[in-house]
Amino acid sequence: MAVTALVGAQWGDEGKGKVIDILAEKSDMVVRAQGGNNAGHTVVAGGITYKLHLIPSGILYKGTVCVIGNGTVVDPAVILSEMEELQKRGVDLSQLKIDARAHVIFPYHIVLDELSEKARGAGDIGTTKKGIGPCYMDKAERIGIRMCDLIDPAVFREKLTRNVQIKNDIIVKLYGGKPVDLASVLADYTAYAQQLAPYVCDTSVLVYDAIKSGKNVLFEGAQGALLDLDVGTYPYVTSSHPVSGGFCVGAGVGPTLIDDVLGIAKAYTTRVGKGPFPTELNDATGDRIRNVGAEFGTTTGRPRRCGWLDAVILRFAVRVNGLTGIALNKLDTLSGLPTLKICVAYKKNGKILRDFPADIAALEGCEPVYEEYEGWTQDITQAKSIADLPPAARAYLQAIEKHIDCPVKMVGVGPDRTQNLEA
Ligand code: GDP
Ligand code: IMO
Ligand code: MG
Image 1 (cartoon, rainbow, N blue to C red):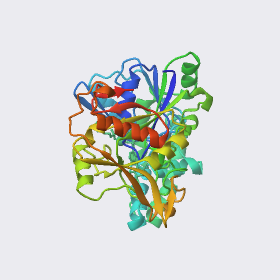
Image 2 (cartoon, rainbow, N blue to C red):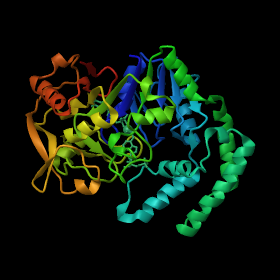
Image 3 (spheres, rainbow, N blue to C red):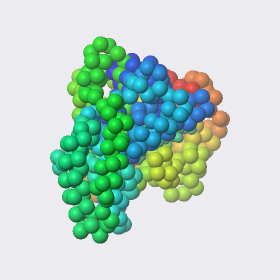
Image 4 (cartoon, protein in one colour):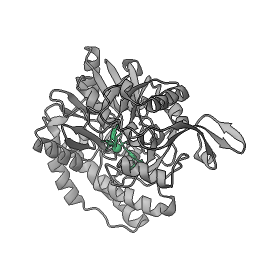
């Protein structure tokens, strides 16, 4: 298996957590490299559901080293409660490592996420309001506070004092909001620092050494290609780089060290938050997919917008990530639909577009060009191999491979780690 990167190929929530958990069994190390607790990764193992936001989905295997890399943003309160929850369930955390360079989310980031979204009015992004964007803003402005600062009391006090002053000015003077209290943030975060300090180290060295010594290393993507700050549907994106290149920057490894890139997609398309979505179904079929697929956000509980599979998007994901394969989840959700549609191109002003437009304004008015496929009625949740699937389901998979020029290597037929078919 060597070194595999796993990325979301759509707008997030493709079932990355489930596939990571499956591949983690054979992995020595699982690495998160971007995003924070805007992510919500669900793992169902032995009838128990785990919802992970920051801790890599490999944590359920004892001995697997789980790394939170330098490109992530860490909310200490969230990671500590996630750790506590896992410990209560008997999960071993001794192999958890947090990079010293990872940036820390503070209460003023969360307040500013809320206030800036409110100020955008109808033009809001629909963020998770976890302070992700404002924390990455501080990183880019070079005033961010990192894990290494958090665990150094003198440095921390100085940087926090400066930042609270700057942020309170913005909160109060620009937005008319309520200032955050320096003393209470200092006290809370000093306590968090003591609890987290034993986990903090230079994870780039750990990852490099693991790869060099031939260990199986898995990079766990959060979000998805269309939420990438650079190549996604800007401005309706997150503030990090969910594409495969994000692992290089966010885990401190060079691109030549990654062997395979597996894209995770759903057998249809979903999105939470605002922004364009060409194949969205605002009808009974969309409602049916949402209800059967339980399409409600893991992090915010928001109903996910649902629509047909979009091969234009998947071709984009193949290109920007250099995908070597696709894992297609939730094929079971489509069982019982009489006809399935795959969007193979967009049509605008009489012209056919095969590539996803760079500018979302260009996406406006794009009509999906669909190909129709026969559905199936059988329950496929107990299938043990792709050969067990009804012919119509296999034809649907073959059509996807043809349209995206990338092999489907795994197929999900249910949420449990056992409900995964390998090609
Ligand atoms: P992630 O953010 O990419 O890890 O995905 P989420 O966990 O947010 O959302 C995916 C949801 O689909 C979770 O509730 C999973 O348990 C569930 N899921 C994953 N794969 C399958 C599948 O093949 N079939 C079904 N029915 N559910 C699945
Ligand atoms: P996983 O890892 C789906 C979306 C938000 C919003 C936009 C910006 O579970 O796939 P942010 O809070 O990041 O500034 O919000 O990005 N978003 C996600 N959507 N899955 C996720 O993560 C997401 N993380 C962020 O809904 O539209
Ligand atoms: Mg999710």
